[in-house]
Amino acid sequence: MIDRLNQGLRKVPIWLLYLLGDLYPGWLLYLGLTGGLGPDPVKALEHALGEAALQLLILGLAVTPLRRFLGLNLLKFRRSVGVLAFTYVALHLLVWLLLDVQILSQVFNDIIKRPYITIGMVGFALMLPLALTSNNLSLRRLGAARWRRLHLLTYPAVLLAALHFVMLVKGFQIEPLIYLSVVLFLLLCRIRVVG
Amino acid sequence: MARRWTNTLTAADVTPKAAFLNRRQIMAGLGGMAGLAGMGALPGAAQADELEPNSWEDVTTYCNYYEFGTGKGDPAEYAGQLTTSPWSVKIDGMVERPGDYDFQQILGEMTLEERIYRFRCVEAWSMVVPWTGFELADLLALAGVQAEAKYVAFETLYRPSEMPGTAYRVLDWPYREGLRLDEAMHPLTLMATGIFGKDLPNQNGAPLRLVVPWKYGFKSIKSIVRITLTDEEPPTSWNMANAREYGFYSNVNPEVSHPRWSQATERRIGSGLFASRQETLMFNGYEAEVASMYEGMDLAQNF
Image (cartoon, rainbow over all chains, first blue to last red; front, side, top):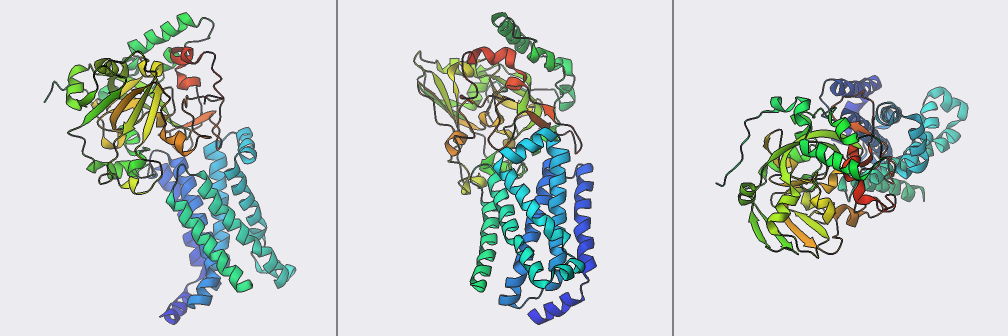
């Protein structure tokens, strides 16, 4: 069963993932412009992009445990998943800057004074070098060991993304806590294997 | 059925702006001005001119009513099953005539009128809603407020069988709110029974809810089943959940930011993807009418 799945997945071209991944924000924008995102399209767009980014980050983090424990091989897609996650985070940030907060002085105030936004920005900053080095040239230039060490930044970045979600909701809400638990579980998988 | 006030107006009749210039609101504004010479312009009346109500769609599909879920669309999706008839409101505490007041009986005693108010959520979005209702002061007069009473406490219905959101302890149910007695008696403080000339949809707090237009939306408690007059500041749900973020007063104030976001500006719901944020007005634009109640109070301390 897993073997058949792996064989099938081997035939899926990576460009298809990029295509679908790029269509989704375009689709959201179209919905936002035509009333499909409801009465508050700015927040809906911001949240949809943020949540999709978090899901992709989790998927990227799950690739190794899925292979180790279930034999499911998604390694081929990991880079594109990571690059797409970064794209969504960048779009999420742009929507927040340009469509939501709009006022530059307030943006700086928010980054400094609001912990959940500070955490989100740090997460974005951690992902920036990863996105820039997600290509074969950088891998060769840095060397596999250094490249891999650099990309360990994924772990704190995903954790910060999940915390960002937990900290922004009102009241005691389950959904962001589920995301955080999944992230913590996947990170624990790593610690056990490493240690 | 008691003498139910029925409205022949439709949403289309609601839109003409001039019709909304509420006489009482202007009177209250002028009254406030007389006592507060030098306060500046007359924001309440001046801006009433610009109040263009949101669409029925906006008002009825974008709601915070956590008893039905925390998503903005959840109340519209799940509140349909709520039984709102029969309905009674227990009025107790420091009143002359405590008891269970049947909703139809209350309607029979009250004169309904239309009020167009700005509605500003603590989450920094806003709408304009054409409410139908009566002044809370009239309902309190029905029960007879005793001289010692200083506060009014309110409670929302808590019925888990019809309220899927209460399966999670997002808040300490039932939802509770409160006002100081002078706030409760203020002519702007409305008990709403309808929007756009129709009965309140369940997701908007049917059959009877509070509307306090100069306070953040969560103060305007929905589907009220109990009103208690007390001499102590009553516990309120969001304050119980997070006292640092939600004060008892929760007056709209652009200068006092929520710990997690600024309150200086707001997103006007229904204005699309590329709309500019609007400046938030002190007391949500009702400064002339209500500021005198808070004279001498440090509003940053008593947020």
